[in-house]
Length: 291
Image 1 (cartoon, rainbow, N blue to C red):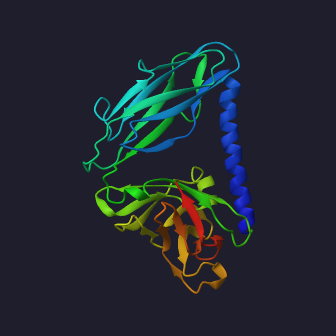
Image 2 (cartoon, one colour):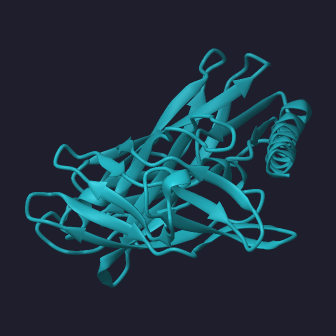
Image 3 (cartoon, rainbow, N blue to C red):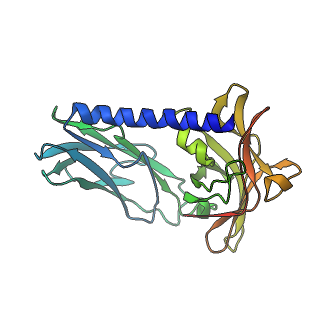
């Protein structure tokens, strides 16, 4: 049952993604797209570069409009469009990638909280179409936040998925929980869930965090939080286990991440995705994560 569900979801998601992009490419000989829909940086970075990719089968010049959309970050105060200064990217016939450069104001020494804005592409001529990924959200993390070392995009590999034996990639983001300096937000932490999150619905997890003076600490995801995916038996939820191996576990607990002195994070115990009747997946603990 579990393998059939996994294959079905993966196949549907792949077909949807491919069909959407092919539709744009077929109808328009020239279109531009962003690389991804989200970026994370910090106030000390000075600026952020966001690539814009052009698919051009005509060899002619193409132009794409770029706009900054304010969130908590205010244009002219917190952010500034450096390139293109006039808001217009001009691709020559043989150019396939240009970068949008946005300047970031630093407020180091002042606890301001995270700020955000979006970069938005639009077409200015009927010959050029923007692709499906035309808006990217940028989060500017606050270096003065007491849990700042946790912030950012983390990645690693599971040691093993119990039922398939497969080693899989894990990727997720950690961001501040507004107004609370003991909690954090995480995106989905399951490798298979991350591949279908757009197919179901995005889920943000809440985690409790502790940071010690030596920059070590623990982050725990309370058990029972929803994954965002539902099947016939009900919603799937995250559950930690009290041992590194699923087979050795005697009970469920929170999912715990250890922040190490070298800046990596370790997940010592197994965790899984469950509902009342089935186990979607169970990952062996002990894998490392890096930013």
